Length: 169
Image 1 (tube, helix red, strand yellow):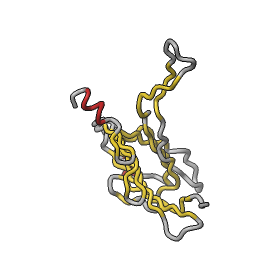
Image 2 (image 1 turned 45 degrees about the horizontal axis):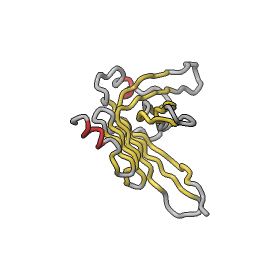
Image 3 (image 1 turned 90 degrees about the vertical axis):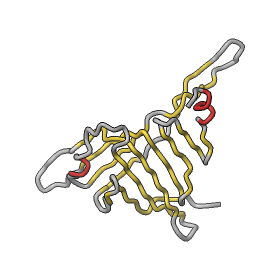
Image 4 (image 1 turned 45 degrees about the vertical axis):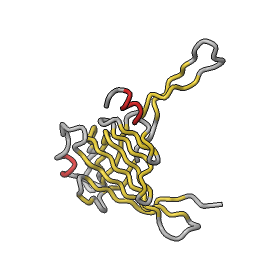
């Protein structure tokens, strides 16, 4: 039996700038496949056809006003913003921490300044959409998706290699 790994701390880096103490919360990207039902003649029920990865986004909340983030708003390159989440996870039945890292390249889709009220806490919420995503555990790459280059590596296996070959890429 084992205990679950729980996050004990995290940090966020924005284009290499260390945001230590400035980010309050991060909603890591949800991985969702685009699936559609298919039932052909002679089939007793539908199966789901996998059409690839859905859009990826990372949502994060800062403890206050962030000029460095605003400077990146409206950037024209699909991968103009680099975010790196570094989390330390620990299981209560083990010594040490697991290092979980999520890297996304994309651009800021939404910046929500929240409400401004004197002498009350303020927050700034950002939604960053990604064209690149990588998840690593203790330095081992588990998932890497590069939408522009049609790369989808899961546990070291590129699931789109044969498709790239089939279409001449």
